[in-house]
Image 1 (cartoon, rainbow, N blue to C red):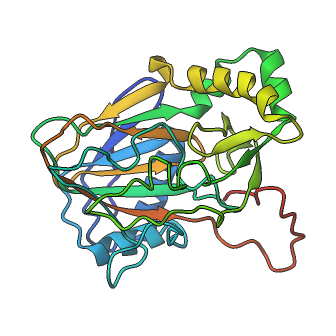
Image 2 (tube, one colour):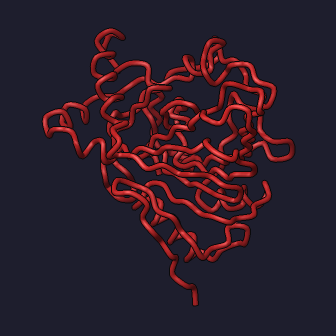
Length: 294
């Protein structure tokens, strides 16, 4: 008989820590279903004291959907789905050091990310998470209604250009400059979660460029307001890493921010990113809009 998961909430808006499960082992379907349900409910879930090889992390991620191969960051040798996020002691710029939702710049954005800590600094290097479902719930009914009728343009051009934060030169990671290589894709500004039915804002400072049909200057005022609103402390939780820790977050509902406050120390993480299942071959395609995220 499968034992129920031990789940402890860590903050009011989002976040829960799960114990009593070894992610390195192949888990029965009932356990994977329970983890998935916890992810949907709590938006980001945490595990401690795990010992995952890259292959085991890949196997765990694949229980939730196909894995993404990042278009601009080279994957691990032998495991292209695994991104090694490393900041060496002499480096000043970290990866993911700003509020964002992973891969929103793709036509079919990622649904989740699984981050595993290999080596952590003695202090610092926490990750912040912000519930975009809570952010939507806190808006007035009038603004909610307005946003539900809008779509926004997302692109990697700003973040991965030669002057972008993520493309800055570093010795520890191979990050390609995306100048002239990226497209633009349009996604609803409010996503309805396919499993919970809960609504969440779907814009972020890193990859949202403008509102569809609006000038950039017109978009800026509303987007800047939303970006400020979405990072309100009451919508957030904070995770302190140690080796063997795992965070699994739902990109359809959550922003995250990797703090860069551990200069002179090394931090080594591994990430796999879960994509949505492919749309049926017979479904109509609209290249302007995101496909349903499932």
